[in-house]
Length: 192
Image 1: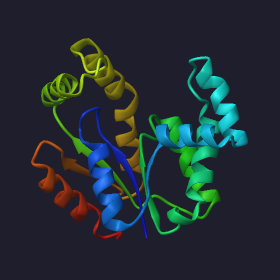
Image 2 (image 1 turned 45 degrees about the vertical axis):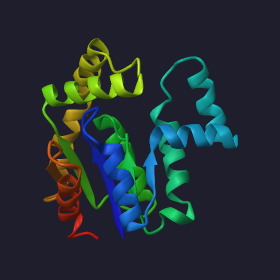
Image 3 (image 1 turned 180 degrees about the vertical axis):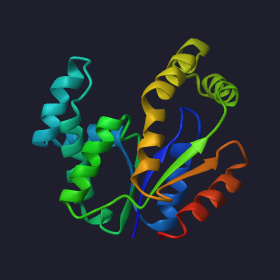
Image 4 (image 1 turned 135 degrees about the vertical axis):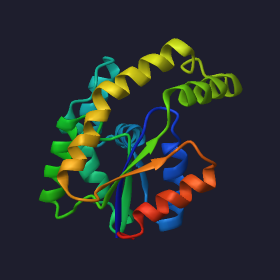
């Protein structure tokens, strides 16, 4: 069983690596954005509640997101493990996630943090913005997203370091794709 949480700043390659490892281990890559959209599309009660916040341009409350994640982790394809990508984003969410996992008899096996320097991330994201025509990958937006990451998400690393020995593994995300994948697999190996 492999239950993983992926962290890293915007442009670190979380989604790409999560997809690779999802296929490798036969476990779902669960992106909070994707499951929120799916819950809304399926018209679940939690999805309808989330939609009301999303339609107003507000953040979906933690309790709703935790409920949607709980429902997703209960699905058959997640019984052998999962990869959470994009959640938790702050310590409060991490505490609520831990409580929900404990209540459902689950635990995270490893928290994986892709480490990439800000100047490398800016170059990657600017290049991606040019190549894909993404208007959100401009320098001002990128710098804002990185500032939010450093302010709200980095404290999670301290939180997870304090949880248990070897729960958090940091991997250099500024190397060739296959090397990052290799290093992630080595970090997961004791749990897989």
